Length: 569
Image: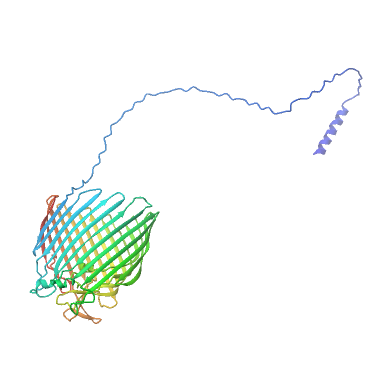
């Protein structure tokens, strides 16, 4: 590029030189003044000139439109309770009499609605002078009194109660109407009380606890001979139950610490009145520690619990330590419509003379009691609601039990028809289904069906235990004036151990078993409420008139009718 530029300049100059023509030279003389040079004293710098921009202002035009305010009156809100809470009364009295000379009396006295205090007294009496045709005198009486009270504060609850029960009856399971009734009479007295304290702070991460103490004294009838005053059942029971729990986030940490002592005496140790009536002294202490962890997930639809039950069984200075599992999981589907669940549990049940006679009052007083141990009970099922009125539950369980108490007729006391105990190890399979229906407060129906299968180690059958059960409860309210209660109990498959051949007895594993027959117990109760204070009732017991045998050789009374009135004031 430079070469081309240089060539162009040369050509241009050559053309110019040719265009000058003749050369003229001029000569002259003169003076030429040259101005002196001046030096700048300041260094050069850049001067930036900022041009200000004029700000244009516009005047604000105030435009005001005329306005008016009108206030409408608002009626004050009124809170009404619908329906209105019913009035409560301090005293309730119920009195009646049955067709078999069966007087009934009940008195309740309690406080009304209170945020802080609760208290009450209950006294009841029921007796019967009726007879069972062909059997020994079967009169009985049941008396009870209960006093309770409590304080309910914001952060704690204190509760307590005292009770006394007195029950008299006869060992009437003899086909001898002329026997001396005093010779077959028995009476149990039961006195005791409980007190408990529970904290219930509302904070999410708070330590709460509950502690309770229980004492109970249980006695059988005192012999007529004062020298034999010790030859009756004497039982003292003391228990301490406590629960501690702490909630942290989605978990609840709990610990149950329980201690139970039961001292039972009949006569004196190592003595006897006869070859078959020996003294017995039993001291039994059970201490249980049960830590568990409960967690929630999926917006509380899933719940799981896991823990262990550590139990020490001290029975007449013989110690035995047991470990039982605790685990359960359940999950709510479709807003509690279906809740499947699965779990395993176990535990030690302390048998006392009081608890055993509540099952069978004809028990001998000199029995060697053992504690029932459920090694493991695996269960699963599904429960839920089919609609807002119908609820259901279907479940199955498989349990392994040691020292299960079974009632059998005692051969040495057959003349008095008392019962003894045998203990066995067995597996129990239970299938259960229940259905509930409720139409507001008008109609309530509950039905439960159970099927049992037993597999025993030493005995042919689980004596006096049913193979199946059906229980139904119906409550109906008509115009808040007429109330109908229907109870239906059905049982089947029970067998009793006997010691002689008779109709209906068969040999099984060298044991004589007799089928006790079908149990059908139907009770109907009708009540008419004249007003909120006065009502009348009519009750029909065993209206199916089935003289079924609850225990071997001990039939129940037939059809009975009882009527009476109630008062509130």
